[in-house]
Image (tube, rainbow, N blue to C red):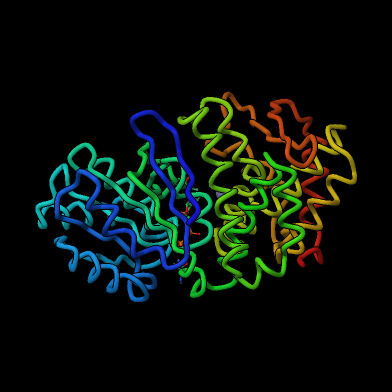
Length: 366
Ligand SMILES: NC(=O)c1ccc[n+]([C@@H]2O[C@H](COP(=O)([O-])OP(=O)(O)OC[C@H]3O[C@@H](n4cnc5c(N)ncnc54)[C@H](O)[C@@H]3O)[C@@H](O)[C@H]2O)c1
Ligand SMILES: [Zn+2]
């Protein structure tokens, strides 16, 4: 089993990564100071695949368990569904020592974490992430949220789980496109912090795409470690944590400009990373070779490099509507070399427009 510690003082926790790992959950909970009542939150896809089995296993260990499945998809990450979960928690009589366990992708994790953070001003929360994206990104770091009709993740909190249990086996049922989505965040981790890890990804493309357990364990372990080390230094995103947004400034604009219907998050971030690398090159921050390396890696993992459906004027306007924009200044995360990025608030508009043109030309989807 691989383990990653997230060191945050009295909010510290461990991430456990293994095959057939769901079996440790009951023991883990028996060792925690929680009571018998557990609300497992899942979505209908994941709940049908793994929820019933997990419920049974926890019941056999003496827990009183309810499994609640929400409708799959981003539309469920809202206050209405949160209200549904609060009602469930009240009816079940969950108290401050009861547990909410999130079994699913980032939607389930963010929503359940938000409910766990706010129900009775906070009750124990365990993440069992089942999509690659949630295993390498959303389950680590304590950002929990629901969406508002006017914007994503606008209502939320920082709330750390008691533990994260990652079962590699879950990835066998994950649709390929969702795997590629998660791989964009994995590539991002290498680019922002670890050249050797970036090389590992390039040397193990087929093993990763074939979902070989050792390769999956390694990419999840290393991505979690990289994110954990950043979060430990800046839990509430006052400075360093912003580097995790590499590729996201343009990525978010692409998602919004295509009404969240053409590109999923990782695909938009992949294009955004390429865009950020091009900006870096035009500002003389990184070499042509560095951009070529990143471009090549993005393609190898079946992710796109351009979004021809986007409109440049609209994209440009959307960049300034990102919630991370402060005083009308975009916090660009730019590339110095693979493994090292820096924050820049001054990117000339003509450079941005030039890059938006490049990343909206057709025929670059690999
Ligand atoms: N909190 C954070 O720091 C953070 C970071 C990144 C993303 N996010 C959030 O995460 C969400 C996206 O997460 P996601 O990509 O996991 O989306 P998701 O939760 O919608 O899952 C994607 C799809 O995969 C299915 N699925 C998940 N695991 C499966 C499995 N093992 N087998 C079969 N199907 C499975 C789900 O039912 C869903 O249909 C967004 O809401 C985003 O805002 C949060
Ligand atoms: Zn992301």
